[in-house]
Length: 508
Image 1 (tube, helix red, strand yellow):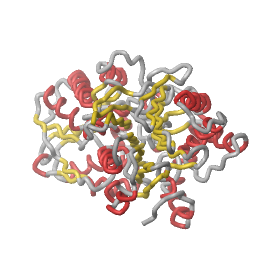
Image 2: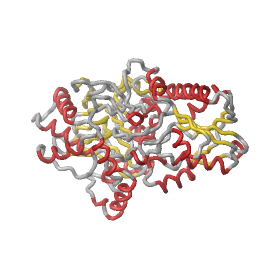
Image 3: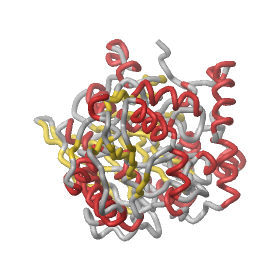
Image 4: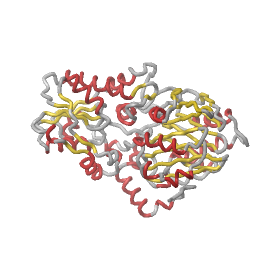
């Protein structure tokens, strides 16, 4: 999962891109980067770290230009090396820089094609670099010195024919403008808007609507599945459907966890979806536990707070903020290694003893992935005197890896995989556990936009919408992205992986 943004403005866009990335920081906390274009020359700064740490005043001064793109990264495919910070760059044709949110499911095959047929070199293990070179090749074979909008759309159509998986892309073409496109299933989010200024209309494209809101852009609409949006340097907007059989099946986990609640994705308010998740879950608790003895409902901050408030209201019990969050600790479930995750949970959340002592507590979380967080929090609750600890998940059991851009790599590392709900309850140490039903979760999202026929719910039901994920693929994914593999990658990075070429990067 990553956050992407692009702006075609009437003045320098460096500060606006910085502001957009800070708003999208929740989508990637490992690395950040900005590329701008000024008189046909790319200006770039990217590095590992949070946005506020990557960019200093001297970097911002260098990032001149009236159009540019930005990226915040959380590594799924590829290592955490600084050389894999995005945007990526190729010099031919024209000079292209690209930022990508998502994962390709056929990156291995594409990598071979790019080398053997397209005669292009891939320097990293990132599928984003593969995607960039596929797009560059599709443009190159057109043989145009000055490509027009039709040429851009033809190239994107070629990408759709070759690439599979989840991808939302913003690319910067030197001297020409910004291109944005979304995979034919619309798995990963992408939205665009406009802003009127005294010098003319400015355009912005981003992962979430909240980035547009904060910068004062009016939302036009979401980029449709398979659609390409091209904004040339003169500020002209061009759009075209470039996929043969597009269908909107967005990732439902955006509504559960990843997106900010103040975003609207594909016409669905994330906040309202989470409210409905709380309502459905409260109904299930009343059905299964009509004589419950819950004294207080406490959310595990922050993404479960909205659902927890509704649950408390519907159950007629108190809602309390019983866990205080250290906001300087990153998302724990994406951290490498079980020991680090356990340690970070204790550093990240601190219980308020008064809200737990001698009480029957219902803890509410957005989901249960590895089980590390909820197990540690349940034990923390008992340590400060909770009489009984119940647990509610606003999402169904996560039993399958998410292959489209979220790091839930290995089935063996998912606590619910191959286990009953009763077994999960025992493993996490709760007195009882209740999960959201999948049908209810889907209805929570569909109620926000009845025109959406289906969602990617693969983490819950193992049904992958691209149709190319089988047991063999998942086994390869497990081998590449499990905790042990990550540990080896980290060791390699410390031993010299940083020697990978990071093109056109200001290191200081």
